[in-house]
Length: 215
Image (tube, rainbow, N blue to C red):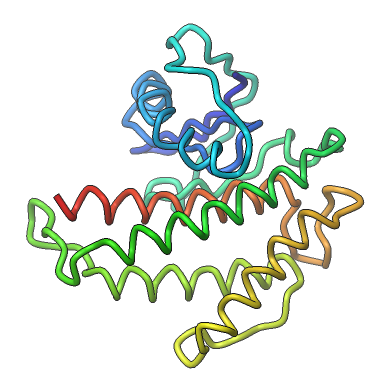
């Protein structure tokens, strides 16, 4: 498994570059990689739903770091916000279609987690954290912003019907399934490898947050 590291002042993200959305953070490179591998089972559940199997629990030594990038304020805030040289390389045949399937599976997984969670979630150690519906609203809002980076029309998720949200998501999935290259689709847009990583990560990170705070 090839891994990219995004190294901030206070936080480092480790991302499995060939498996979009599989990113976890730690206080050091070693801790970030360890956390990444600890989540292989949870990420694997979503990958299997998309039709792709992961190996079983991967040993720490199996993670090959192929690229390091300097993080920024977004990194330290808690999101993998930097692009790699890997993101600007031509994707392999079928890679972007697989990213579309993984994005579709991540949407479905997030919705199932929300549907099964209590309205009031357990608070964090300092009493913070959004409740279920606020997390879902946040995810939809961010998804609208990320969609603009794919060249999709802007929309107001707070006013959207369930059908309109589903249409937006289907359009995002089609971007990857129909792509002829991995390049950004518009000036200021995101390369598709990066867009898939960021979008799927955000869905799964909040799905896992809801799961953990429902216990």
